[in-house]
Structure formats: structure tokens, C-alpha cells
Length: 136
Ligand code: CO
Image (cartoon, rainbow, N blue to C red; front, side, top):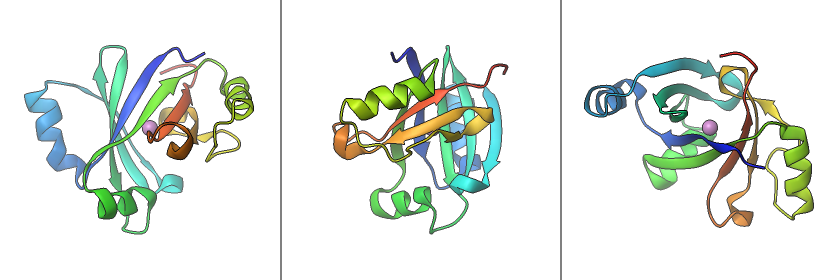
């Protein structure tokens, strides 16, 4: 079962430039900032109620977010749903015919375990499922 929206992932060319909008105009607070080398991104989580906005800046042009920006420009990149047991959810989604990009969970932002589903099988929405780390 999906518990709630964990975050909305947004591709940006520059986190520092975009923070003017999110911090000053929207008055959101930064909860976390991290470079995730394995995914080729720098990411910032901003608090919005119980959920987050995740700004994603590519570390280079050949990274997944870099290629996304080339093709589509800045904007909404993915929706992430929070789950309690990602292993069980992945099995359930696989059985339901969802095409998984990640066959097994990998490490996401802030020590979470995450996996992505291919937008081909989710109505055009790149979908991430997230099992948060125990303590924030
Ligand atoms: Co995400």
C-alpha cells in the first residue's frame, strides 16, 4: 500500500538559483542537501507539510537528470510514494505487471531505500517508491 506522497522530484539546472523561488517566495525550509554520486545528482529536500519537494541538479550532462533537462527542460521529473516495506511493494508491483527500472531497492536520498517504475507502465509518470530510513 502506498502511504502518502513522499516527494515530488523536480529537475533544475541550478539548485542555488531555484532556491530563491522555493525558500523566499514559497517560504519552504530546506530539510536536507546531498550529493548522490551514484545517481549523478545533487539533491535538496524542502519541507512541505509531511511531504517534500526534491530539487535535482545534474552533476554532468551525461547523467539521467542531465539528459532529462536536454530533452524536456526543467520541470516535474517524478512522483515518489512512501511505503513501509519496499521489498514487499516491489514484488506486488512486479506481479501487477508494472515495469520496474530497479529490480531491487537502491540507496536514495537521506539513507532511504528507493526504486523507480518505468513511466511506460505507469501512465507516463516516472514513479519512485520510497522506504524512509528509520530516523531523520
Ligand atoms: Co526522488
